[in-house]
Amino acid sequence: MQLKKDQLRLWDAGIAVAGLITARRRGFYMAAAKVTPLVAGNWKMNGLTASRGELTKMIAGAGVLASKIELMVCPPATLIAIFSDAAKGSAITIGAQDCDAAASGAHTGDISAEMLADAGARAVIVGHSERRSDHHETDAQVRAKAQAAWRVGLTAIVCVGEQRAEREAGKTLDVVGRQLDGSLPDGATAAKLVIAYEPVWAIGTGLTPTPANVAEVHAFIRQQLNTRFAGDGGTIRILYGGSVKPDNARELLTVAEVNGALVGGASLRADDFLGIAAVYR
Ligand code: PEP
Image (tube, rainbow, N blue to C red; front, side, top):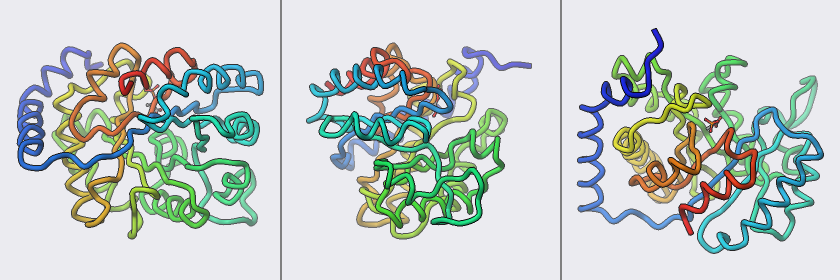
């Protein structure tokens, strides 16, 4: 049976209250570290050369946000070079959606981090749930991809998040903890790593967790990062992703320890993407 939005919210109510309290307590005892928020758009397998017009609109609207946040567009690999050229000198940086762990070689159809950097990308998403499910990518492979990104100076945006059944079974933090342990290489710094918490059931569905659910998971991720990467753990950005739209962006992005968003569908249109980023104006 499909779980409806309201049921999901009700089901989560107990955890939600605990999460909110935890976040409030953390806020009371420990001022949140200052980080520049990042709003990144994942265009997935969408976009042709004609989509450059949409990027141009984004560039035009991004200027007023430049001092407050970082804005990134991750188009399909075919558009990275022309988008990088178009975005040069603007407030928008260009990222990629995946990379192979190897630098070069006999891997037909794959693209290395070296190639992405050469085409102008500054970051690469690794371990997106669609890669984990469609291509059966493991945590170990995601970790190797993040290392490949670092090899050429790209920031790795590492995605983690639970399936709906895992949330219903109360295993969200176990799953996210295991993914972080397995997917993150040692030696992360705030410049090299961004985490995207994306509940799989919220991606492209219009469903979103409650702000308290988001607070609980983000506080947990922050704690894991602090433990693992002592000096930089407090400043590595943790993005929320999953059905972020202009009309729910404020509710989701103002939660404690949410340092921006990874946006799928709503990043394809400049008005929506900039509408989400406008939370930080
Ligand atoms: C995503 O795929 O990373 C994503 C967050 O998608 P959407 O915003 O469409 O849910």
